[in-house]
Length: 223
Image 1 (cartoon, rainbow, N blue to C red):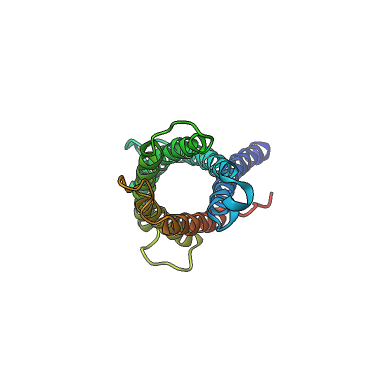
Image 2 (image 1 turned 90 degrees about the vertical axis):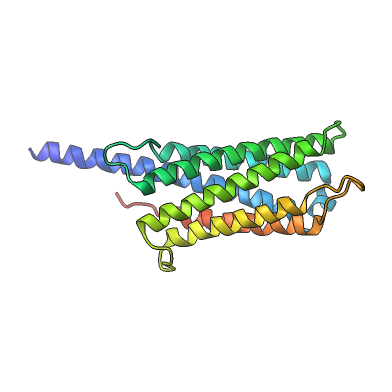
């Protein structure tokens, strides 16, 4: 019947619109988190606003990352093999799950850094270790995302927005990894190996994640 066909089309449009809305929330969550991380690492920002405010900026940014990662995880569906499941879909799920864990680790590290900046007696390892493990989780998640994208498209397809988004995310994860390694604390002096490189890695990584988020932002669908 014509009425049934129209109703089915309307339901499909509604589901598509809802998914598009959630994808936009995911993208904007990652974008805002990236902007806050880039701001926190910007030269002179900590001097201008104070160390505590700088660490608050990082912590709030990590919360946006976590919310966005949770939205992404809920959008990827079931991880276990099932009828109709593809390898790319499974890699997507594992990528999203590991990335979500990584964001939780960044929540821990940034919150510990915040407490430390307020004078709390926080072991520096409680700041660095979750930051390192969070960066490793992001690297693994990005590698799985590359595999998933390659399975759907190709390893080299500069004409695809998803290709640019995935590889921008990989570049950001590498930069965060460099930042974590540069932030290793030297036991004898209590200072980090290379503070400037640590900040630079965070700043570049945040910009890469921002680019990835904006490239993944879905276009509004006409009704």
